[in-house]
Length: 143
Image (cartoon, rainbow, N blue to C red; front, side, top):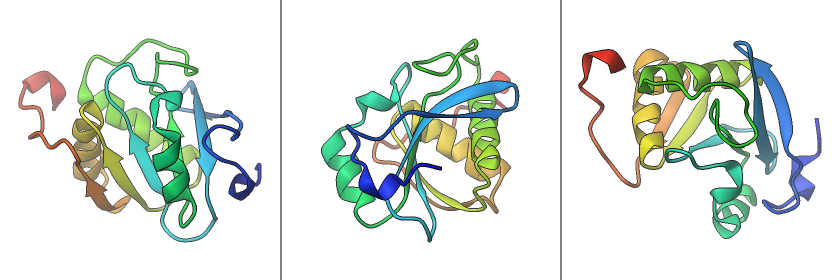
């Protein structure tokens, strides 16, 4: 794996990992060790939409993982139609990287996904941060 410590949000290479039949595009920054922070973005956002000043600031002290959801940006496929399917993709992505526990920061739709991941895989999530909180979706199709 690339030495992510030497990179910034602008210079970090886009990496790929195969998970659940999807080739996810992602970036991995910051020091190894400890619990990584996984950033989950809003609908149609890509890894380049995160503010580099935020990413670089966090990555000075901890590992940060950002990835494109299925069907968005550098990750091919069809965009899932439910939050649960997006959460399943997130879990598959993290398992493919061999990550055992994470903190999640979910922004907008990413907040829904963070809540779904924490509900489905509570042992995977140590903490989650919802800077734009919204209750979990209540539609039967999202369950």
